[in-house]
Length: 355
Image (cartoon, rainbow, N blue to C red; front, top):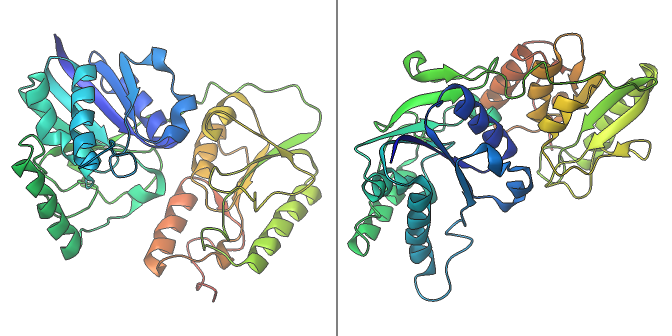
C-alpha cells in the first residue's frame, strides 16, 4: 500500500511537462500516476518515468456502446484510474481544470475507491489560460447541480459543485496552484507554488552548424479567427523580411497540430515533422532566434535560451482578441517573459484592428 499517490490528468504537452516537474520536485516520494485524455499526446508519454500510466477516453466523445454510454464510461474511468492508483492513505489529484464532469467526479469517487483518508486537489498550469480568471456564469453553476443528479443512478458520481473561477482555484478542495516561472497570475499567494523551468536550461546543446539558425513556430491565425488572411500574409512577409535582413541561413518551421495549412510557413523554410512537443525539441537543439505570433511556446523559448537569444512575436497589432483585457494580460505575460512584441509599443497595446 502506498502512503501517498500523486495523480495527474493531462491533455497537452505543456500540462505533461508541468506534471513531470511536479513529480520530480514537489511530489517526490509519492507514487506517480499519469492519466492522459487527449490521444494526440500519446507519442510523447514516457511510460518508464511513471509508476503507472494509461490513456483515459473522454466520456462525451468516447462513450461506451449502447444505452447510457457516457454514464457507463464515467464509471469505467473511475474503476480504471482506481486500479492504477491502488490502495493508499492520501491522494493528490492534479488537473488544469475541475469544472468538467470527466475530472470532477474523481474528487469524491476516487478516495473511497482506493481507501484514501485524505484527498487534495491541485491545479496544473495551462499556459496563457492561467494568467486570467474565468468566473463561472449562472448557467455554468446550474449545470453543475444538474450533473449532481447522476448520483441517483450511481452514488459514486457525486459532482462537487463550487463557485468562483471555473478551473477550481477558489474551491475548498483546492490547496495548491502551480504556476510557470516568469508568468503573471491572479491567484492568492498563499496557494501558489512556482515550478522550476519546464525544461532544464542546461539541457540544450550547441550544434555544429554553419550560419545562423532560426525557428518559426506556426499557428492557425486565420483558421482560429485571430487574424484576417490579408493580415496573415503581411505578418508572414514581415517574418521573412526580418530573417533575411538579419542573415539567417537556416530556418526551421514547426506547424501547429491544428493548422494543417501551415499558415505562417514559407517555401524557403525547412518544415519539422516532430513526434514530440516543440518544447522538448528546443531543449536539445540550439537556435539563434525563435519567432512566432502568440504561441505559448515562445514563452518557453525565452526561458530556455535566455536573454542572448531573440524571441520575437509578430503581428500583435493585427491580431484579434476577445477583449481589451485579454490583450492587456497577454501583452504583460509575453513582455515579462522576455518575448519582444514586434509592432507594439512596450506596455501599451494598440486598439484592435477591425476584422
